[in-house]
Image 1 (cartoon, one colour):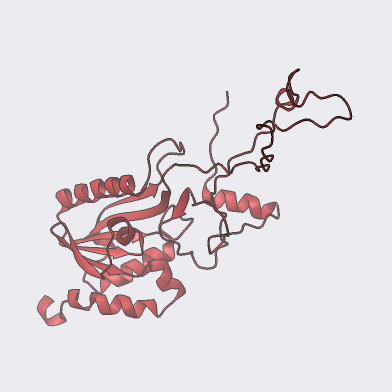
Image 2 (cartoon, rainbow, N blue to C red; image 1 turned 45 degrees about the horizontal axis):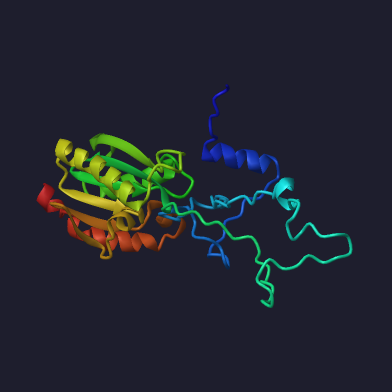
Length: 261
């Protein structure tokens, strides 16, 4: 049996565009729509890239088999031609109203979808939320990150490690890949980097880490490691005013030039 290899997101978009199929992404929950099984932890789009379809799961309604539609002999449906079948209830009771097919809703826990680029550059641990649909950092995003780090006195030569977490890990929906499992997995990766490289500060770009950890404030402590929350790199590329927020929050980390002399 030939093994099926799923398309990457860029290839999927390319094929849809080549076939003239427009992808559509609802920005709000549609009326009577069930909760999504997969949701984006950071919904930042990369530049003007086309939006993607939601991965909603709809339970197929199986057609009723012919054997079920044909009543067995002796049942109320088995009435002579021209005679109406009697209701199945007790005599004198009103006939029950017909009920439409029930909507089957999945009980599976919603699965967050995100790509988180983790790296250690100099003394900084970087948690960079990639824009929706990206599986690796882009050249423009990396250049902006290096420009930001340059103000903190580090450069590309100080990169010590890099790893991208793509969640969910598995396509099997029977595997628990909810928010708690995602947080545990990311925590393990971060703890490994902290033990191995001993950074002094975490820079968290975008919404993935705050939503995984439940952070509400712009800074705090991740265990014993202080962290600073910053706008997504891809938000800053699309909305330059976000850079002012980034600059304001990084000011306390910028050392005066005469201190480095």
